[in-house]
Image (cartoon, rainbow, N blue to C red; front, top):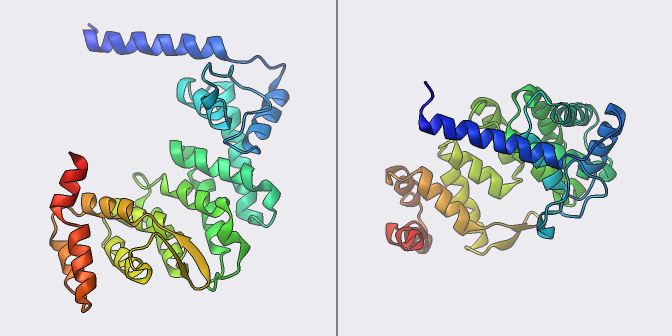
Amino acid sequence: MMNKIQQRREECLLLEQEWINSRLVPYQNKEELAERILTLLSSDRFQPPTCYLVEPPDYKGLNDINYQLFIPIMYLPDDHEIVSEILTVIGKTLEQTAKEGVSNPDKDNLVSNSFSLSGYFAFENLFEAVKDAAFRVISDVPLTAAGNSLMERMVLFEAFQGIRGYADTHKDVVLEAVELADEKEILIAPLIGTYAQLKDERAIKNFIKYYAQANGQENFARNGIDRSVSFMYLAYSIYKNFSEGAILNRHIYALTDQSMVEKLEDLFSNERWKRMQD
């Protein structure tokens, strides 16, 4: 017999199904549906859409590409035609990216949005496509990245975030992608954040290295490239994932620069983070 909690969950699911079904925008055939999805994926995600899968929300601030793509995936069954077609278009996009790279900036929105959705939902049936495409994009950044236009494009960040979304299910592959970015000294913030998420000590090592080079400033230049890193946010991620303290302290007290030791002691002090949490 179904208990009250299970019954309530079933009722909520039914209400969600009724709500999403009532807001779906009709389409004539599968070709029209695929065209709409391709248009949405190819658009600036923060701009009002030019076509719709679901009726626009009452709150105009939500009327963007993300809403049109996320809502169907979140509320419709996995085997629904709309969800299936979204995954098909994303899969084809990423497979093409793995073969050709991202030499054409005109496709940046399409590729970026495909990575973003894949990483957020971690679709298992898209993992191989995400992996191959992400490694292709990250690999295309030369070791001497100064002046390389790919460094300045959001598609590089989204490629990394796409594969990072699989950290819980494919840790070894994600770690390999992080190590590749680490080798090229790119994507500093997500690189450190992912190392911390995986509880890999290289999060601490890289944090200290870049924090020292930037002298604690969020905006700094390295190898001729302007960087922007929220060290405070990353410090909390490290503090949270290495809360036992001994590992973190070992890296801090291995430094010979006493002034940097003092800065890091203050940054990672229990009192600081307890105050922020309070």
